Length: 403
Image (tube, rainbow, N blue to C red; front, top):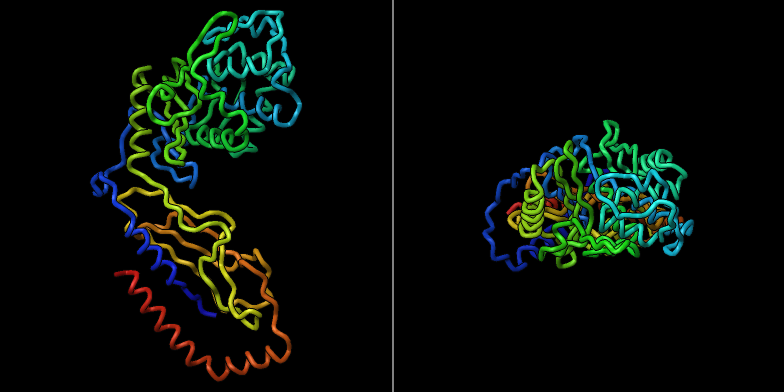
């Protein structure tokens, strides 16, 4: 069977995108933006598209951004019912003695879990992080081992944790890409708890402290996540913001000053929202194209995606978008619903940016004996002429898209 390239839907999609109103900014392709950060990444969370990256896979000290993993572990315990927001955890002398940023818990007291969440997320408390680690795992060392194990389960394969705080240690590291992935997991896995990251201040033990995330105080749509700073790491930030339903994740690290962290993170986030957009192409289970079946009832089968299909690209690149459904047809019956039968290729210019499996949208039964005889006879009589017509139509349709 010859590969058949379905082009009708691609042509319709190109026309639809061309009719979208142009943004007011110039449409000329812009060069990739540069950044002062030593490591950086920006990801569109809907499509997973990387909008900017710089040394994104380079191991780096993560300082207090490590606490996103600490909080993930705590949220997981809450979600599993192992602990509740009203439970209390004891403060050890080790936790009380922790230096750096603090929640100012007192040794020998019991602290509510919900207060500890705010003490970590808003106040970046090293003491609160150790309280959580010891409360959930018995010791900070065991908790860190579990952090690393969970991180690897989530796909953070270039990360290792030896403490709950991000306190400097040569074997404690992650990458910008891993932190971006962790942020996406936390937002997706624990929507009921993520709101704590947007709180601007928290008072504990009569000490009021503001959230250290600088983007929360800018009109950028930011609602999380966590800053970090040590002498070795420089100034860093893992942040997320939402505009018009689009969520972006930003990670920067290695910035020389606190002011640079503020201005650079805001500049990069604003650039990413301004220069890129996400286009919804097809809904889950929407018929994208149909394919011919061989000795099947019905004679065609709808091709669908299991998930919504969207693509993120620069405004200036959208007219270069090409969407093509590829399938080897006819497809022999029987065909089960959900069976992979083709591929949807999404390309910008000559570069394929995504390939998505196309599935059978409904089952197709095999024809009965007489139906198979009739189909076979038609194929013998008409096959040669159908093949010639198909090839000509395919060439004409490809030419139309090229124009």
